[in-house]
Structure formats: C-alpha cells, structure tokens
Length: 73
Image (cartoon, rainbow, N blue to C red):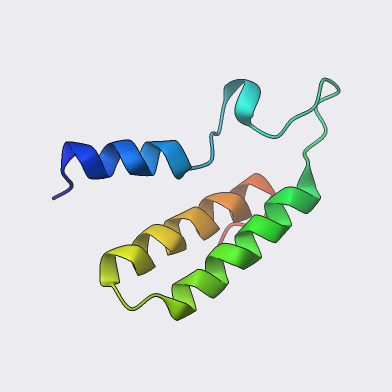
C-alpha cells in the first residue's frame, strides 16, 4: 500500500496523459524524441534499481512513455 507521501511523489514524476503537459505542441505533434529518450532512461533505471518499489515505479514510467509514443510495452 502506498502512503499519501509516496503517491504525491509519484504524481509529480509520472508523465501526464492529458492537458498541457502531454508533450503535444499546438499542432498536436508528439514530442516523440523526448518520450523515446525518457522511456529508454526509465528502462535503464529498472535494470539498475535494487529496491523492488523503485523497480516497479521505473517500469511503470517506462510503460507510460512507451504508450505515449505508440509502443505499448
């Protein structure tokens, strides 16, 4: 179970999926390069993390970035 503090931290770092913070410019084009870099970074962090909670969070972030670029993990 996550504490309120943990949820707040996750909310701050999780990528948004709607609204102004989706990585969409005014033309609706996905800032794909950013999402690709972030997905790769999160996958590397999954491999390096020793804490199971950290691994799970990084895996979830990688999955969300993959979804944003159209590659469901």
